[in-house]
Length: 179
Image 1 (cartoon, helix red, strand yellow):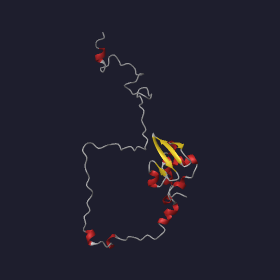
Image 2 (cartoon, rainbow, N blue to C red):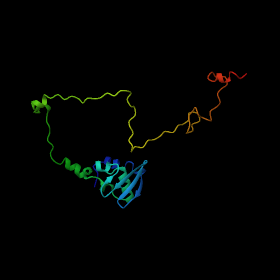
Image 3 (tube, rainbow, N blue to C red):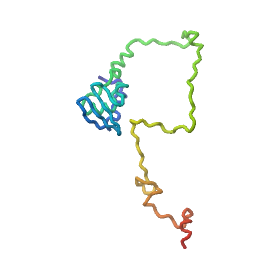
C-alpha cells in the first residue's frame, strides 16, 4: 500500500527508536517508552495508548513492535491513508457553489444571529509555557558556569573562581577588620 503523503509515514515512525520492546507472544508485545509501559497486540490492532485504535495509524509503540518482527508498517495502516482512497475521494464531479449573490438562503436561516461562544476569563496570570504531554520527553538543560565553562555548577558556586580583591567595595566589610 502506498501512502498518500510522506507526512503519514513520518508521523508513524516518530519515537519508535527510543522504545524497548519485549516479546510476550508472537503478536503480543510489552513496550517500555520514557518510563511508561504499553501492551501492543498486532492481531487485534490495539495499543495501550489508544492512538492506534483512534487514528488507525500505528503509534510509535506499535512501530517498535512491527520493527521487532521485521513486518511492513504500511500493512498496519488504515486504507484511509492510501493513495487509492485519496484519488477515489475526488474521482466524482464536485459541484461549484457559485457566486454568493446567487445563493438562495431561506428567510428563517438568514434572520438568525450567531453569537460567539461565551469565554470565561480566568483570574491570575496566564501560563507562558504550554503543557507538556505525558508521552512527550522533556529535555533538561544542564547548568554551565560562566566563569570556568564547566558543566554542573554556576558562577556563584564555582570552585575555580579567583578570590575577591581585598580592596573592592563589594567585600569591604569582610576586610575592614584586617589591619
